[in-house]
Image (tube, rainbow, N blue to C red; front, side, top):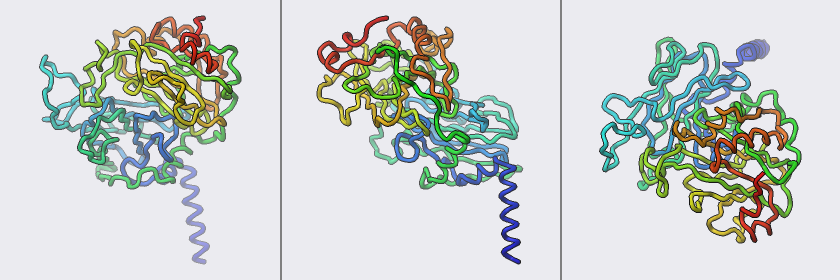
Length: 435
């Protein structure tokens, strides 16, 4: 009889979770701070992470009124908080990036340029901040107001953490600990312990099941491009299941379902001015060789276009070699960097030939006066539709790409399939024909 009652009780619990999927998702993730890290390493290689960034994720269920996040400004190129709602596709319901986050009393935000003309001559101790995700207050200042009745994912992004001479063991989080998390329910607050280890398989599985529920695989295919010329097209709304960063805008290139044997992809363009920051320089100071900071960050990444959409390889502003302000990138199926590439040519791996690819080019937080950004191309209407689980045809980007190239001019990444001997003998100019 006791076993019968236990079975009935278990069934009732299961029914309750089915009727309340928010509670079910919350119970599938450990009750600790930042249980999931999205990165190119291990279980966390999902939803197209960048090589030079880390994304830390925590769920926020409907049982709590507020989530209070207290942290120290990291030594990094950029950091932010973004809140994603449980609807499919997941929607961004609020966000704050570094310069928008007001410091605690007596602290200084190192991402905000001082009002005086004097620059800081020595690195000061990092200031602290407090951000609140609230179901009972509207968005204002450091408060992100959210719905009372939706399950949420809260993401902390940290891009290009600075060099850490102290070898503190916190180099990937900008030399500071991850922020503390305090949850409040019915007026009672509880500070969560930090998760250890991060990326328990159960936690990552719960995240991916929530993102890709009902999608066993992506649908359709890129096919074969109609010409060697490949076009990066700006995306109207990037696939929400990939947790797009609201402070990035994206152009996408679809090189075709299969790698073309004996050939390479060549990409050439002019690099916008960015800060360096890895040496501790501020975000408003242009990197060596640039006169202005045109945008906070840019990067090109090659992704496997199959669930859960993993990172293969990236090159970003501070890792990309330039010639006269221009970059040339070669994508090939070599296991290691090929010896036929000159040192000033940038190489990105194609990766496993069994997966179709998606090439993303990102622009982050451009200066409003910089007229050649992806953001300006999108404002001009140079866009195409791309959302998962549907895979667009490779040629779907042509019209949007031709439009974007007119807006971005020399800063547009021109790309083409090319025979390897053609590139070796004639460089990028021999591969890319203007159309």
